[in-house]
Length: 154
Image (cartoon, rainbow, N blue to C red; front, side, top):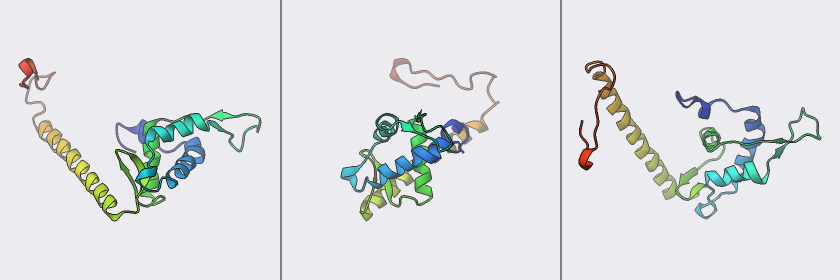
């Protein structure tokens, strides 16, 4: 679970594990190649709209439950499928998620992940640097920021 994102990265619910995750797995295993890429909103639509009925095994067979989820939870379930090697070579680009059979595509995707890691690390370093200054300024706003005349001033 990721701190401050607990709602998005918490353990899977029973419905997510038993209904939504298998649907995502089925959808993504059909997305072989960039031309068959599927976006998060398409997955969400398939789960929430096209096939919304699900009957838990322990419930009255005449009852149906509508299962809905959110984009962040879809991403979390896809994360689980990736890190458990359930869907090898699942990449994501601007066209969506797809299974790549192209070494260059996979290497480019790894490079994209490396770029994002560097960007996140830069933010972390800046925040750590700023924290060293915490308390050296008066209580309240640590730094006054202005965008007057289109220029950033502190």
